[in-house]
Amino acid sequence: MRSKAKSVKQSAPDDLLLRRVLDGQIPRHVAVIMDGNGRWAQARNRPRVEGHRAGVQAVRETVETGAELKLEYLTLYAFSRENWSRPRVEVWTLMNLLKEYLRREMQNMVDNDIRLQILGRWREFDPSVVKAIERGLIATADCKGMTLNIALNYSGRSEIVDACRKIVADWASGQPVDIDEQTLDQCLYTSGQAPPDLMIRTSGEKRLSNFLLWQLAYAELWFTDKLWPEFGRNDFLQAVLDYQSRARRFGNVEASSSSESSPTELDSASGPSSDFGAR
Ligand code: FPP
Image (tube, rainbow, N blue to C red; front, side):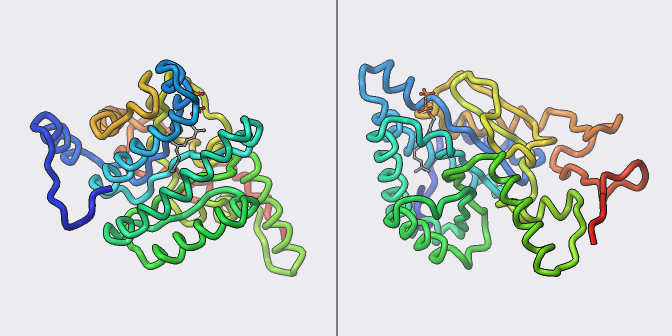
C-alpha cells in the first residue's frame, strides 16, 4: 500500500475510470475470493507457492484501491478451513506470507486509517501467527477508516455453527435471547458490519466455496477469468462500475439504490416473520 505521504500517480485511462466510479454509488462492503494463485504459477512452470507470493502484490493493490474508494469494509478470503488439506509446504508458505504482510503493511494501515479484523477460527493457528495477528489488531484498533477483514481458517458453515453456539451459551447463562435473524447476524464474525454489496471472484470459477454464506444473501456477484496475481486496480474499478449498473431488488419489484443494505426480517413492515422467539 502507498504511504500517505507519497503522491498518487495514475495513468490517464485509470483516472477516467476512477472518476466514473466515484460518480456512482460506492458499495459499502466488497468481498473477494482471491483464486488462481496455483494456476498462475503452474502456467509459468513455477511451484504453486510462487503464485501465493505473487498474490500478495495483488492484495496490496486491492486494499489500496478499496481505501481509495473509501469502502467501509473490504473482506479478503485468504485461508479456508479446507485449505489445511494442502501440502504442508504450501500451508507453511501461506502462514509466513501472512506474517510478513502484517509486519510490512501495519504502519501503512495505521497511516491510512485502516482497521484490521480477522474472520475465522484464527486462534487455532501457530502461536507465532496468532501473535502477529494480535499485534495487527491492537495496532489498528483505533483506526476509523476502512475495515479490512481477512478471512483466515474460515468456513461459512463453521461461522454459523459458532454463532449458534454463542446464542446457546448466552441463553444458558440466563441472558434473554430472541432467536431471529438479527440475533444470528450479531453473533457472526462480521457482527456490526454491513453485509457485502459486491462479491468478486477471480480465476473463472463461479462458486461461493463456503465463503460468507449468510452475509452474501443479497450480494451482487462479479467474476473474472483473470488469475489472482493478475488482478489489479483497473479490474477492481471495472467490477465496481459493473456493480453500479445492477438493479438491486432485494426480492421486491422495484430496484433499490445499489448501496442500500439488504433488509432483514425486522425491517419488513408486514409479512410472515421467521422470528421464533426464545425466552
Ligand atoms: C487461492 O488460489 C488462494 C489462496 C488459497 C490463498 C490466497 C493467499 C494470498 C493471495 C496471499 C497471502 C494473503 C495475504 C492476505 C497476505 P489457489 O491456490 O487455490 O489457486 P488454484 O485454484 O489455481 O490452485
